[in-house]
Image 1 (cartoon, rainbow, N blue to C red):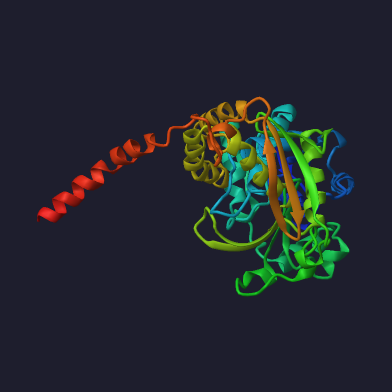
Image 2: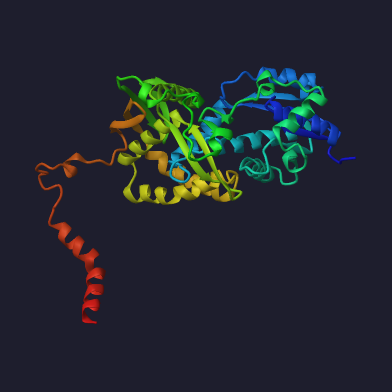
Length: 408
């Protein structure tokens, strides 16, 4: 008999988590609480409630939570203040959702008196690490059940057989073979992995993409967009004040319309293997470009360079599941301090897969001084003779080294 009496399951209502629900009941003989998060994936979530009820879950043990505003406000926006990119390209759409899911799993554990959490992440992937590091950081004594590391149901065929044997409802798409891809979506992105994409030499099929048109089929006319920033976050589009989730929703719509934000990437997973995935991040792509543009006129040079130096470490923390770590929190404090002056507006042009910055200004915090930067007569604002001494001082060590070499 297991010492686990109640477990909170991260539950989507799909094949895998439906099998896990029944497997938990049979293997651990425990009461199960289901948690389904609305992170803006664009799917109807109420069917998950109906499936959970059909499988004997008490109504008070079914949690379906709208986390869209919290997701963007407390996770996506802070990440973008750092201009975060993993391995030069990936905007971390999946990675940044996991700490919020872990947080809510622990919240529900505390609310319901459960003594364990469970998830459907496989033993090959990054998500098991992210969920569990987050859970342990927030509740050190929590017990974690990871079925993919325990059971022998390691293929789709075995999962289907288990579902049929136990009367678990299976969607028609699963009976017919399911999607050719493993997909994960939230307000920041949608990812595609598996099957056809497991050959890194094979081009992704055009029919795969969900949120964006191909650049070739994007409108022939460019579209201009004004983004207003306050303390590093976008607060308005084209003069319209919007909530964080509304900002990202609108940027996704506009970016997808113009073929923006597609990425085909082979990334280095935390567990050691290389993995090929394709991603659509139209809103995030616009947001990153615009944020760097407003920082270009409001951040001190050395502060900007320091942020760029630290960004890869910050990106690795998020990718590797260390959102709740003391080092990420310390770095976030520094990043957020730099954003107090990142206020103003940026104008971008969206055109056939491209985000082109065409203007930026800050009435209160711009460090751009046209009287100094001008190529015309600056009326003595800058003494060009000063540059000679500056260059000689910076060349001194080079000259000393060269003289030594010439004497040998």
